[in-house]
Length: 116
Image (cartoon, rainbow, N blue to C red):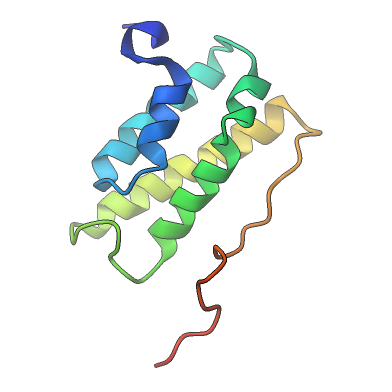
């Protein structure tokens, strides 16, 4: 199927921006990765939709020790998803070297210090 048949980048980003099981995020990232690799559209359209932030947020969730919003599952799910996020970031940077990179910081309201 091509991108328009499955809803396009906007629909995939909507998947990434909702709390979902890792498999859904991984599937969306894979499709976005192939979309970018094949240059089927303007990368800045995707950036305007929040792709970079969505990828970074997803990566942060993968690296977070807390299970929310992901259900408990095999560590390999997070590792695979984190790998996809990193590939996406490198692909974005390689195709658009001047692309600004959003700061990789916790969202407002989250504590930057954890109690042990």
